[in-house]
Image (cartoon, rainbow, N blue to C red; front, side, top):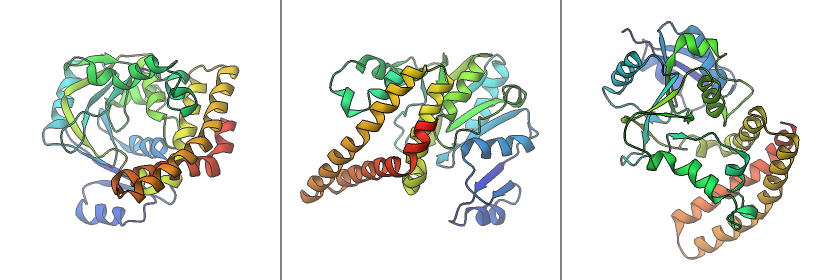
Length: 289
């Protein structure tokens, strides 16, 4: 089966498009003059693709030799599969969350410090986070797949309308999974792996990623049927919780730095930055969704 590689560059400033053009002249390169978001960029690539299958891949992934062939073989053997997702793993081979149940407001709200201590939503959150790590090591049907690596038929992708470009960054993989699963099952294939340097790109641009992830999650909850009352409660709790977490993580950062725990201090600082940008750049849009 012929292979075509399509790279969409969302106005990066690190010389990536020039590198692709110079070192991989066989690839089709699409240059955007602004960051259009993952969904819009993926739709651009899909629009010019000619192959019967589309393989959407994040820029912080490495595909081991033979992986794509094995996924295509699986797709040919299972034409009923709407989307096929491999096991995502880190550089040490440890399994990352690669598929999940459909998220609900409860699963997201358990992440807030205001509700986590009560334990009321712990069961929903554990199921949401841990099912992939505790499931059987065999291909199986799942509710959602992570957008870092997804294989699907081109005709099916076009039939469901592609990626929803209302999502800028975050939640779009839940949305596509939900729409495809309404037609055909999603298959998780854990014996095929893709290396994923999770969040390596988002950490470089927290001002962009942090607000949009929160907005994307809210958009998905609304689009998947969240009532007006449910959405108000969700947004209110997240909004009230953000400055509280900001203060806690700020103190935590200072404490860890004072005790020379540099790595953990950097983790705390990362979270401080995420919360700050959500409050200062994303809050208005978060409430408009």
